Image 1 (cartoon, one colour):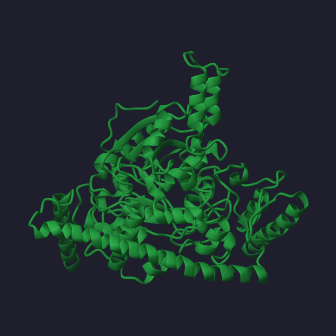
Image 2: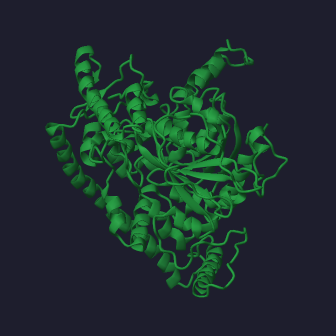
Image 3: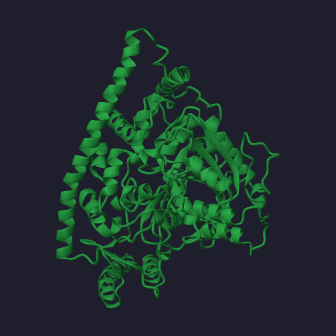
Length: 621
């Protein structure tokens, strides 16, 4: 892997505040120098790995490097080094992009045809009972509630139009005292602020810079009746430094107590807008109206790829995987939230890939100290072990491709960027339907428990730009799908502990650090003493990941430093139901609200407002 020394990367970016153009040139030169020096150094000391068309490089032990480069792990193979841009490199890159565009488009077309056939078969199966006048078998799980919500939404839209036509009509107050700021027919757009205003809230966007130069979006959800948005200058990126001195905390309004910060992180191929699609039943809006200070973190590239020096056509901008999301993106997001709010810790709520990047970041060999900034980690559909879905034919096809062949088929830039082009030009309802067909076919979930009238809205925030390298980490030949686990080959650590118990059968084990069984547990454990409390919500019908297996790992003592304060298996839930099901607030949201309060640090609890609906007697001191 080509390593960018941290001292060379950070210093020029900090200098950008005083001399922006000079800093950009210096940082760009740093990238170029790394590409040149790494190849020559590899030839001298033999550290170059076999990479075929793409050079792989291990870090120099003498360099001060980023956290992602601090370990050599079998599940995290080195990434390609593309070197400094020149004519030969550019020619190769454009050739690879052209070939991969055609091949990935063929792959996407095959999936689309499969989705079309599957949808036609499902539709036919649902039509037959109707022809037989058997309506009970075709009814949706929440068909009554869906009709009620549809009627309420139509009534709200009608009242909104009346208020717009007659300015003197009193403003409608919602049940929570938040009058809507937008209304009428849903425009179905990719804008979280628009959907926040429909429920009486609003959103401001902060620009956050990671330690390796990416600019990522952080959305702050707030009640406009008690908070005034900051200026664009106050919300701009602050450089790559993390966890500096916090500024004075954000005021929650005159005479009111502060809100405790909560950061929500999204899943694979999504943006944080996934938490904002269900009106008042959206997890982000629910937590905000309950009394928390809600922040929505987006990973690098996402909806708008941006870097301080690299362009989107540069393959170096796309040479990243799950480690970067955890050790760099998540760190930058947590750092900015704690800086803006003045709190030393926050509550972290993640879904799917968001849980993966958190597990990776908290691992002993990555950035374990980040756990000291998290009061509790709420994992929704935790993605640590693979489910049976990874054995599907198209996933197996991706898994048999060698690293070089994977890059030729899927590119060295964004993963199938044609999907985002379609979203940009396709009518939202058409795109929402097509996206649901494809992703339902790919990942094996359905909309049976969602509010179907909101489905088009949900897919305005998915898919987003991700790197082909990150998808290779999930599904390639050296991947999560191959090993069945994110941090160690499946069964490896379990077998070690079982062997220890067999060897010492009948022995009593206490807390003696010399105890060989206890030592085996700690050696094979993923997490160390900095780990925050965990709370898990697992879909019992989730075929994409195996949350039950992760819970067993914790219950069986394989992670002596992990304290699971809450776990729940919802048998009927699939992978996305934990955030999009019509009863997700009852099944998940209210429990998350309580857990955030229960684990809040005592000094924060004494200064923060008490969220509505929490049980004050349940504390975790």
